[in-house]
Image 1 (cartoon, rainbow, N blue to C red):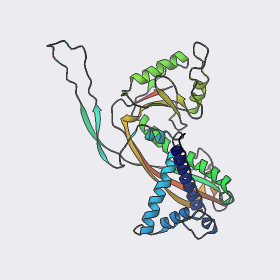
Image 2 (cartoon, helix red, strand yellow):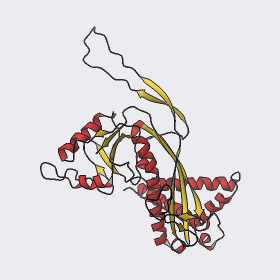
Image 3 (cartoon, rainbow, N blue to C red):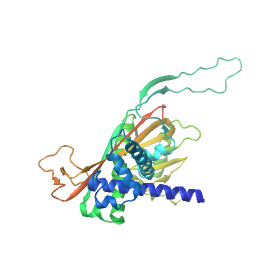
Image 4 (cartoon, one colour):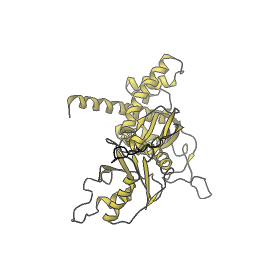
Length: 340
């Protein structure tokens, strides 16, 4: 690693730490910067919090929003490898402004070879459509006791890690469901190594990849565990570089990404340069009043069996994190899904 890379990594880590500190203080005290907890923060964090509380048309407010954007970008960078959307956005997805209108190629041209001299030359057809990159809102809520949030760096690390996971899951749940909804799933050939290669071949045949394209196969954790220990006909590991936590290379230039937010019994293959998208910064709100269901699978519609917990009575503080993002398919045959 070069000295420049070391310095850049240290700067990103510092900005990420400032982002986490801002989130932690907002969860505790909102935008009040006169509390002793806020006064113990770095001057830059204090200035950001003060600016967020300032009117938007003031110089202080604009400067703080700009500084929040810098540390918010550092938080987005930390999601690469954890969130499928952020990984794809950083590795080949074309960035365009949200809410922008663009041209979508609906029918791609094709070439012809071995044309005899004097023979008619085939002319392929291209068709275009229009689309708007509509933003979607991902919402993540992280709750913790006031005492835990008020502790030092250890509590901050725990809070920050859970915030990263919550944002990644909320984003990918929307992103992956919207992409798979545009595909007609292929049916898996089976569970053996030969079947797996057959499935991968069928998925690759269903997409068009250009030289330099980045191809990802999104798989759930259970499938990753099976494939990581799968043996090839020679007795070795079929995918020796595949990790059950971070994914990794599979075959034919395809890299696996792992997500627990895939729709049931689905795999998704995507070519990143066939998508456009972008994401805006993060907005926070403090929650001290209200009832929450403390479970990883909350009821969409509360029932008589739903067990709610009062934030105030339980001495809990919750941070509501909202994020606007969007993605759109702009090239035919950029996606393929598999049903297993």
